[in-house]
Amino acid sequence: MSIGADKAKNGRFLIGEPTGTFYEKPRIARQPGKMSHRSDWAADIVRVDNTLVMAASLRGSMHYGLGTIRQDSFAIGSIYGKDDCQWVIAVVADGVSSAAQSHTFADYMARQTALVVESELSSVEQCKLSNVDWNDLAKRLVEISEEFCRSAAKKTVSDEKSEEVDKAEPRDFVKKWATTLEFIIVQVSCDESSSEKEYVHVTVAGDGAAYILKESNIWEVIKSGKQQTGAIASNAVLSLPLSPDEFTINTGKICKEDFLIITTDGLSDFIGDGASPLGDFFKCELPNCESLISFLQIVDVSLYQADDDRTIILIKETE
Figure 1 (tube, rainbow, N blue to C red):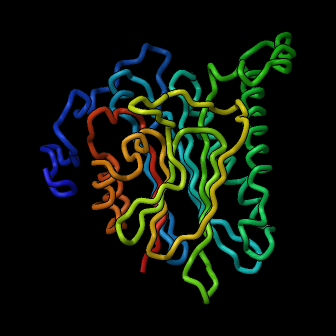
Figure 2: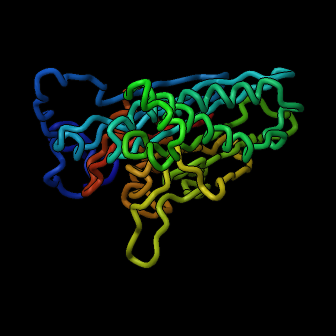
């Protein structure tokens, strides 16, 4: 096929040949008394001046087959600070499959991250992201994650056992609540003397990735996903409420023609450094995409072994 042009019979973009996971499998019937609902797809769009933010989170075909729900989550929004400063924020959280309530935890942490960052930036001086202690903010998010798990755990036990929950360590919660957490903040307003905009990307915990897609159609990796040695990549990931030894914080500036992308491992594993079939496909399709419907169809591309939940957020400037 010619990437970005041909589609399969069901209208879905296709890279390579259809495989066993190409066609979505029907949800496995749940037992009586255990019915619940979580949307298979979630999407949103925000425009702040000339900045467009589009987000999509899709249930993976493997989750369809196993009858498990979408466990990824995201949050997007705009933040207003002093002196007419404006930013957009994009948060992605990947609930760990082995944790039964990871989707609720991912939802909570995505929302809380946006609120904590908004509170921090509302009083930042000189509209500079560099004036924020992002390491300290990441520590606070770890503390918030532990507080959530402890509070949620207390609701599942009797009063007599609540003291045991108080003494529990974060590792005691990860069997039920576990999620990755990454976010990116981009300046909306900029100095008239400069066409560049400041950004910061923070990985609290996780193996997602962040990229800049340059005007010249070149991928620039802000933060790579899974660590890979030779031909083998590890699926091991430290997730909240566990605290990493250090946080990954990347800062820089982008030109108005550049696109920022943040994604969970359901896509970043296949984008790699951008020199991949999926990287080529996105490079072809995303630059001209400004419709949320079109964005969803692009993100729903079928690719061999890409069967996990996938979440991606695109930040770009429009005319």
